[in-house]
Image (cartoon, rainbow, N blue to C red; front, side, top):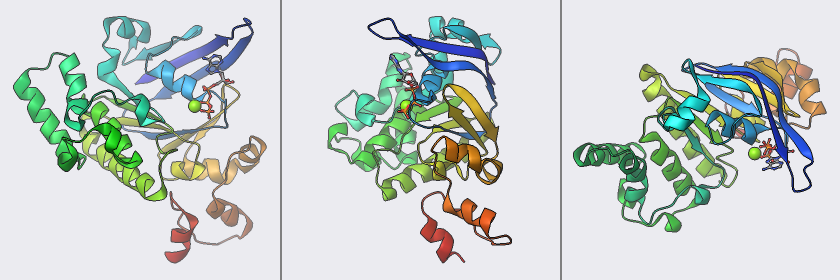
Length: 274
Ligand SMILES: Nc1ncnc2c1ncn2[C@@H]1O[C@H](COP(=O)(O)OP(=O)(O)OP(=O)(O)O)[C@@H](O)[C@H]1O
Ligand SMILES: [Mg+2]
């Protein structure tokens, strides 16, 4: 479990003006949750992701991961075995010249024995359907393939928590579908050993099928509940902070008794399933 207790993050700019990006955030993440974090621009989503992954430290407050203080896990380097993070732009993450190398990189870094490393890389290439691309340069992949490679290169290290910071913003609809299917597959296959996905997204719709939705606003947790409750009962809040309310939920609220199965990609499939 990850526990954030009264976490504050202040940034100071060149003129030493302080910007409070997270303001007393207390929130817990258990294993085996598929959680979405939504919030308007500047609400602190990436700051929360970076704090959880140990890339920045809170100005005050504490984060414990599986009972251990995250600062200790950062200094021992163990945090990288527990939490993996994928960024919005895969180009920021991909660093080698070959797909296969990219996947092996984290294992090489950890000093994994050669035979074990080859086996793990082979397994991940198959699992992510990247085998036929293994000798390609990551530069020459499509956006969707790049993002899939970025996720694969994190999953090879078998993290307990996978944090994705707006992973679909550069992808087209098909690529988004593909990535989501892969994430769902990863979530169900890793479930037995304990696995949590934290998906930060600007698309409210992508949160529809998650177990839990956290709404961040102005550095604070403004709501934390099931998607059903957030999108049905928190419409005034979502409207006020400028977040999209999937049309299925707007209809449900305004047309009593209407049966619509919300879809994470588009409204048209909700209509055609009627
Ligand atoms: N390195 C930094 N220095 C100064 N201020 C920063 C820095 N990084 C973020 N901020 C500020 O902190 C606040 C939260 O930023 P953050 O990037 O966490 O928000 P976000 O919800 O991820 O936004 P977006 O939807 O645009 O990705 C914003 O006001 C931002 O301008
Ligand atoms: Mg962000």
